[in-house]
Image 1 (cartoon, one colour):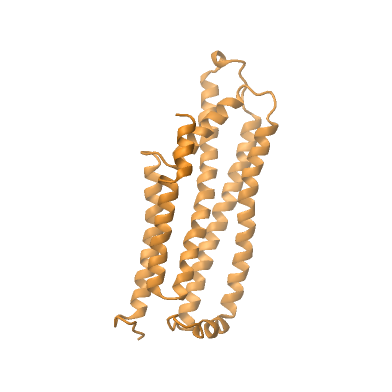
Image 2 (cartoon, rainbow, N blue to C red):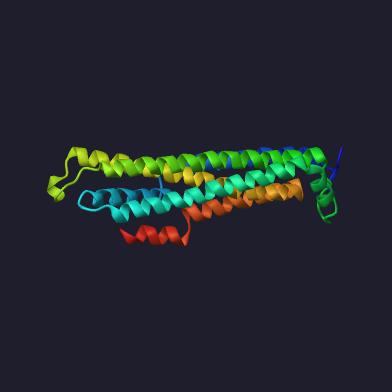
Length: 237
């Protein structure tokens, strides 16, 4: 058994760190999703703008700017999906040469002496994270594609007086699908944040726990208390 400076089994700390990691990831995702329905956050403010965007589509003859904007959003997601594939390829290569990685890490001062099995487990966890990220990014891409079709079928109105229940239905539901696409993109980005915290696992399980906690704090600050959120919220207030 490997013991740390506090006389505690490092393997137990590592297991506790992984449990904390899972709890923080899924716990924060659930928290953010529920809070978005109750309070001001990036997701709720963006939903207001998406509804306003869809409402303006009713009166536009040409949708060139709108389709370009939607294509730009889709390209951002495509970039991360492609990058995720490259990261997965690199991680699989590292997994196949974990013995060499073990020798490299063992020579770094201040890093706890993990076994080859520990390193393989860390890499497998990272691979699982990026597989999840890839699926969420590609699903986001597909949803943006669905939105392109729906925007093409959008009913037109000549004035505010011409807006019917059909128009309101389109506005509400198309904005919701763009919302879903944005959430999927956000889940993928969150995967990158939490994957960064697993890098600290190679240093020490306690560093892993600390890094995971810091990721949650950064995500919370940016989504619920950032300067960008305050400015966006003030634009249409």
